[in-house]
Image 1: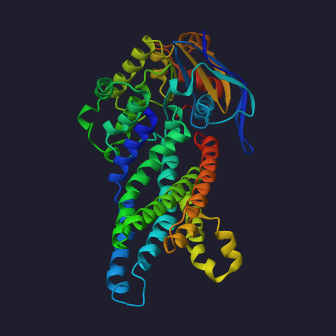
Image 2: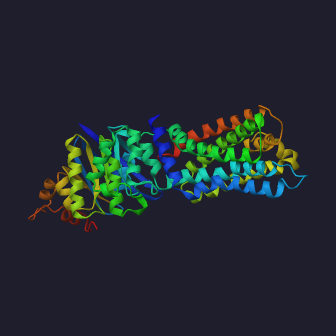
Length: 229
Length: 234
């Protein structure tokens, strides 16, 4: 628990001082607000929440994966992770510390999306829980990519295609049955469809199954790569 | 009592054989020096002993858990956006050591006035001192130091030597690499001379210099190295 607290505090201070990272948390809600107010609401044929769900999906799926991969690859590249591993920091503690900050800061844009979309009552909580589940999945995937990459450049090279597949896949899926069948089991697709659908527990089951698998993959990746030169 | 040992250790990177049958032992509570020019294999040995690299052949043993080891490497692993104090607080929190001790160590390495300065604004020597402060924060059982005073002025280097001697007095084993002959002669109880991945000589500095007739007005380990290899240490 001491290690989790130490990494969490470190990451919070580091994120606060890293403008490039901070901007990415607030860029997507701002764009969603502008598009909603200027385009969606004045158009009577366009759903009011169209840009909110679109930008939330891009934030959770495409925005966070490269961001988390870059943060963790930076720790690896400048050898900070090696000193943490030597100090006895276990994979779970490192992930809870770094991922915990991203998850906590991610609550702000998630709430912003929910307010911009003017969700109310149960719909508000449903949308908020959906986006935070997608955030958890992306944190784990980004962390795994970061830990497997030698440096930030390599992390970007891996994270960007992964983010594009996970971000654009759900948009392409309605046009192709086979893609739809495959993406049905991917958390970003569940988020994109559930956010515009009716309240159900099923998307959460699939999304958290994704989170479980990604957690196991991360633990193996950390054990294999955390300390290596 | 043996603190660190390597027996017939070999290590290659591709076709490049960087360690050949390296055998050495460090006793508990001693300051052990490893001397050799760049590319001799010093850092590879430290990386193996700190479990960052696996050996190709031979065996090695370190009588400490990883969290009981202190480490100062060329790549300092500091967080550039955080201040000196915040960098140390990360490890203070992990080890559960008191804030008073962190402040004391920061003062001892001469960084008290730079406590709130972000690391990216520090000079190389200041970063090295901060790295050393982090390495000794938890009073490690074994301390591995890769060129601990290479970027420091003589006055600061003497302060660092005193810190190393104090740690030894408290029972820590110090394993250091250096180019600095004077440092090795004055600080280390025993040294090994490493050349192209092979140990060419080992023992007490005085004993080695006497053996190779290299005691002038002061002991001259560099003369021993030149005599054995025909090359300088620079």
